[in-house]
Length: 140
Image (tube, rainbow, N blue to C red):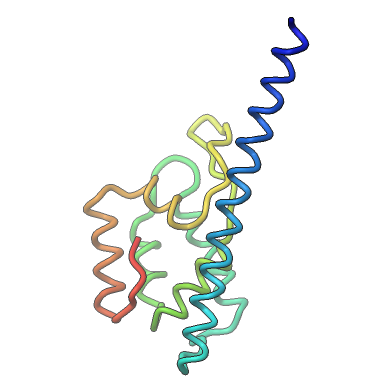
């Protein structure tokens, strides 16, 4: 009887892992698809890859640990010139381990998940307003 219980738990854990992996792959492919559409329509990246990686790391630093540095988040978003820039930033952020205040892993999250976890609705509205003012179609 215990063996069946162990098998059931293992199957459940595998199912949850596979489901999370599938969701990540769908998001990655939709970001890639939207990036390709933007580039095909003539939008070129405004900065080089290393700049986007640096901003992605800055965003993580602004949201990691206790407290959130909202001004750093707003400053990075102000650098985005068009939708393709923002999508490339999201791609370079990728999926990163998010930890709680005690250092325990909450999950492996994309930029949207990090932002919605760290910012209240007013702060998130401010991020989206920055993007809207630049005619960026993507919203968090």
